Image (cartoon, rainbow, N blue to C red; front, side, top):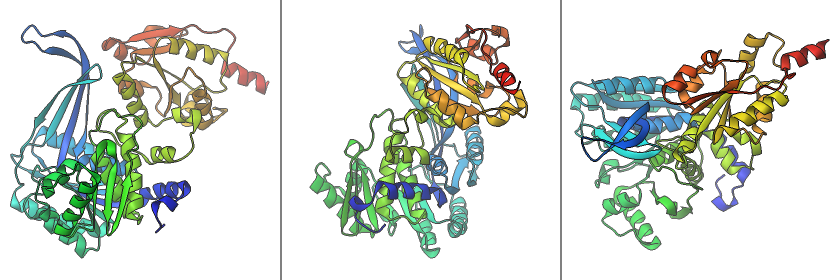
Length: 490
């Protein structure tokens, strides 16, 4: 694939995207804990002229270098993660979140007395109200820095690419970054750096650095307001520190890569921008996965540009998955786009809420879809702006209905549901009940058939507890999948 980008076909790019899962990366940098507090703001405090946030739910996830790890695992890559946390509750929470991700080997060193960087965002009715940061910006202890470099040196030999994710909190302070790059060089590994600050000599010899436009101006002291000035600054930065390549991210103006004597410009891919937080982590992670999978740098950047366009269309610090990149590259999948993994469905629900839309939820086996099902779904959709359907997995149906069911497998059942205009999202669950999905999505409206009572609807107490509604849909008589199957056998 060592040809000009313009000559690389969509089929080849899709094949390249599928290679990302074969990468293994070492990430070293500043780990953070990102907290999101969601609620409603409907009144002003009597104590001060500020809104009162009625908290409905809270979410915590890895941020900073931890978000690079999240993005790599979302692409299917294996990751070793080396960082430092404090001996506080946030550090314990972050360790648990990192360790709970599949495909991650965590090495989170603990520094006594250090505060783990925590960013808490408060959102009301889908809009940001406030961000509160709790952090300690100081170099880590020297003994920890020495241990971190030793661990990373060993991990470099077992992975295919090293990522330095520098948020300026102290993990990569002093000569630590330079020592890590030397360790990667000794292991024959390429190094991608997401830089911070003015002094890029700390990253000398890296294969790629990825400043944004403001950081490029700060690092070089040069103007970056025209195409010509950006290219001049890229060349100056590369030549000053012996970088293999420099990529500048330029928000709505896309990205520009200087690789040797070649310049590549990548126009912005985002169709709709919801939130740019974490987009740089998505870029770095995708490029690292590409290099780890032995893709040409320009191809890896092309995929990273697509991945970033997907990430900024989501709410909060989001990740991009292989299937989303393939979807962006390939032809439209029509109704099948509505069939989503649990995490992708949650991201979609958050986007809908940001627009102020009421989310409804119902669930079932939906084996041999009949008019009764259609009637229930039509009623469900009439009570909300967007409807999520939880679909029992094949194993779940067998446990509920017996070994002869389902008649159609879960992929077929999901495809039929997704083809209905009344259904906006389908996600499969394997548990006995949809309780975990209800807790996760927190729908404003929960719907079941009128053969239930409100008291017997799974999740009703949860939904009513945060002010949601439980609705019972009218049933059409004479419609039953079980009865239909019995007649077929008779």
